[in-house]
Image 1 (spheres, helix red, strand yellow):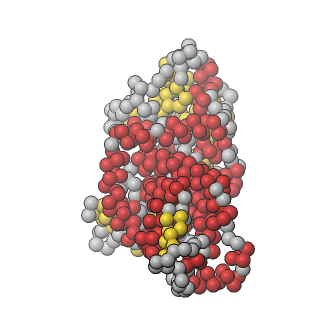
Image 2 (tube, one colour):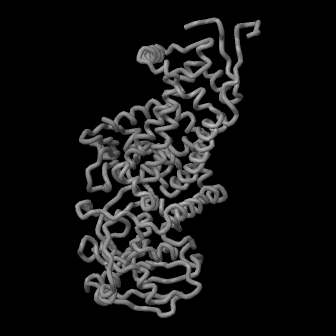
Image 3 (cartoon, chains in turn blue, orange):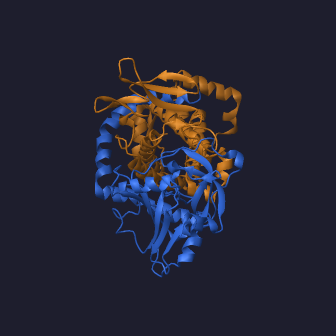
Length: 259
Length: 277
């Protein structure tokens, strides 16, 4: 009943708000679509990034106890990448899969799942926050991204790490519009930023991004790239996709998703 | 007073900074509410605790079902009770067509479903709201507006006076003359509750929704019992602010809309003398 009351209160407001809203809304919709105004609104992202970096530094996301894990960890976005090449790899238990690490690195790498699992692992029980509003808690195990980057040796011009994924977002088997994400070096070298191969002590399922997904725990779900095929170090994000640093970023979502 | 003509006295009631912050607040709160409902619509379910997603039990949910004639029926589920709210919640008209969506298009920003844009509006105006609130608070304390006009006198807090004040409000009787100059007791308590409890609660529960802020300030999670509890409390406190605004507008109408609105624009408020309630 606690929740019911507000909706009744809103009904009281309906009349007043409708008359104001009827005038305001078309104007606000037009403003939302005007490039200049949109840039103005979008400027808050820079403020959020700098304010949060100042306030939270390198602090860790909360890690939960085993009894706080969500009974069901829902999947989101791609459930099964449509490409036949990916599906064949999945059928083979990712035996032939290799993670390519290249771009502005001294020693480009091709790492098999076994090679990744041979590196020192980190497990963490963390909360996954979808931009839509829901949260799920799960235990992720993987290799700290920092370890992989150190092995590859970042070049002097490297500023961002880009994750290229196997899921094409146009739904086509021979798709071109592949999911990608990017983070800067502050998040790339954060102790909780891992390339995860296990969820709740089992190999990550296809729906959750098998065989490897990113966990960057202080940001929203769309930053946690699934089906990673390639990690690339770059100096800037402008030549990828529409230049905003990620698939959802190219659709208008924030590159800095700490909020 | 030496006023001779009609028993009318003009008093300077609202200082410039109060008037500016008031109207900035009006704009910011409207945008925050409407963009907030846009964001809510992306996942129109509320939970309690650290986590919560579709498979977990919800406290409240807006959804849609197919009716017997095939047209969508809006359902508001509170606990285990289902209420049909077609036209407003769960299902409402968008371009004349009954469409499944949490809150209706006329109250979300943008009117069409667009989470990314809703978030851009919300986070820009959140800064405006917070900065405006800071200016207001500093001014309110420094100018002694808080001590002089908002803090109730001890005599006002006696049960007898409070009951009288509540009774006057129920009968919609408003003070005139000298008694109309200061805020009345319920008015003071309500304003204090909004500026000292409700708006800070809004801000803190909002910050708890940020995974970045949760890393920096994990006590926020303990304070509200988790991110999903904070999301529910964010919604509840927004609803209470809507209730406050509704009552506030009603009181403005009852007390004399023209005089009240003019005083919040020019600062000058007219008090009629010589009459008692």
